[in-house]
Image (cartoon, rainbow, N blue to C red; front, side, top):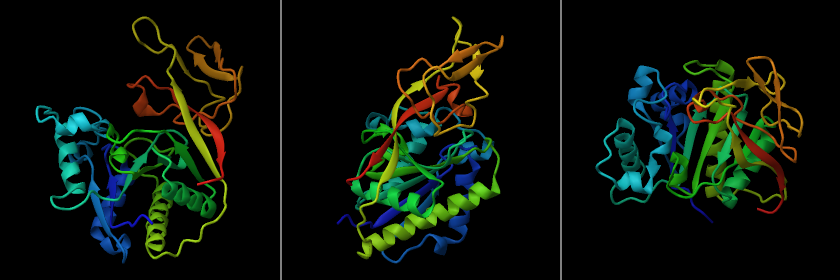
Length: 293
């Protein structure tokens, strides 16, 4: 059995995602809320300078800086590269093993509700996801495989994952989403506590998983400028089916652009504000039922 000895809760890797920022500040002020008897819980703010400025980042996206190469490269001097090395040291103190769990708190302008983002299919993560979605039907589970050290904070340990909530504008707190995220964090910690105590009964439950298949960019002209918007019929319909031939974008001239795929997909991160600069209009997923984990 995988024993959880140390867990880390990180909020504010993006400085304008305030749900995680203020949850971490609350946990720092009231550590008993996240303390559990069988493991230590570390809470930290990911990007303090960006939080202070109310920006996503200062020089570059911190949540892409945790690559093996970048963390070992002493010549990288951007604020986020330096901060990534500091976080690595906090998560892996000298003469101690790396934390067993990373809970990375994020919010999105897309209508993702309460989402768990998994980077691997570790049985304990799948069991946790099945438990959380069984006690709260609002929880959705998104699987996007990432190799260890791929750049995302969650990829730094086998039991790393993201809690992503939305829709909420950047730089804004939504009280209901804050409350729901807080309760989800407690449910995660309680599950790991019971796991350590051997109190988890194995159930043959079915887990609904949305598996990453790719991304779609906005239509753009030769100068790289977008030429269309998310279609009104698609906006805020994260995790809902998109069928071939259904509207995808609406041009500024009012012309519909249709989805030309060959099978039904389930878009998520639809119209995420932070992804405009990354050339991403949405992620596409396939809906799967997982039985054996």
